[in-house]
Length: 178
Ligand code: NI
Image (cartoon, rainbow, N blue to C red; front, side, top):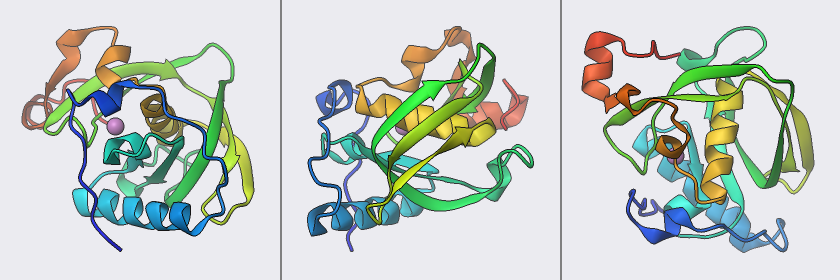
């Protein structure tokens, strides 16, 4: 196990489209997933995509912390990996939630995204997984999937007036964090 170096906004690795994982069941991928989980937890994040640790492959790790769970439809979840993920929006409803990113330390922003998504992919055990997500799970899956396409959350914001330092978000409750 090892802590990995997290790329910060401005590094070109964050702006390129990542490549599919040829074989999700290799020891190298298992090792990468373990190291990404350790790195995410050490950094206090709820999601981390491979391009953020300088590996341009289509996989990410994510969790729903108890404090971010938005209700019975969006229960807390232990950390999991999603390899070669495919996301599809369900319906037209948009939810605006507050996001942060380990590659953009110290900032928060209010980001509108589809409120419900269907997800498919391969988990860290090599098994196919799929489901529907709402609340924080929908946010984190879309945020991490965006990293695989070179998209950072400020690029999704409708109003850059709602981008701010997390200290000020905490003081003024801008955008009411979930
Ligand atoms: Ni991020």
